[in-house]
Image (cartoon, rainbow, N blue to C red; front, side):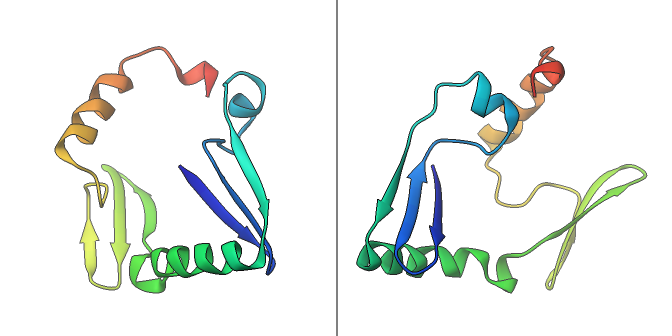
Length: 100
């Protein structure tokens, strides 16, 4: 799910990725909601997720990516479950690069 608040009274909630493939090929859906109350409630949910404490600097190091935050660095993508890591490894071998 993707969510975004625009201004004081607009919100978007849906599955649409903002890339050319999603806009041209994928079947996506979403709602643009005009409601000050809803936008403010959604903002209250989203703001803690984009706080500096949740931010990571991603660098392409010689041996792979490095994620750095205020609390330290890691070579494993943060906030990923074991299942997501296995799925990433499997999808890496599929010939999808030209479609992204």
